[in-house]
Picture (cartoon, rainbow, N blue to C red):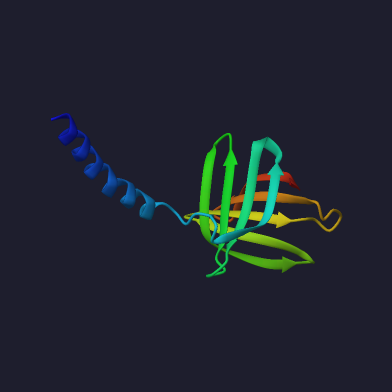
Amino acid sequence: MNTLLKISALLLALPISVLANFSLPASADSTASIILSTKCQGGYNINIWQNKTSRELLYRSTSPKGNLSLGRGTVKATEGVRVYKFRKGNYEYWVWDGTLDSPQSGTLEVYKNNRILMQKACTKS
């Protein structure tokens, strides 16, 4: 009886774990390379990854308000500084890779409906 219970639990857990794995957002792993890592005011840690095969840009952040994982980012050079942009619904997340005055600095900006909600100074880590 005990063995039958263990086998039943295992057979139930396996499909759930497989489904959960496929339903999660794109993850940065050995198929992606980190291209920017910053630490921002307020405990925001931002990593920008690029998938080695598809070249897709991935955004990963940890903060006191929670973790965020986004894909399908874009990058654009603006006045000699790269800005990575990611969207989720009405929100946009911009990560500036350096500033004109300091290449080791940067900025995290969060917009909702094209209005700025938050701006944090960052340093590359």
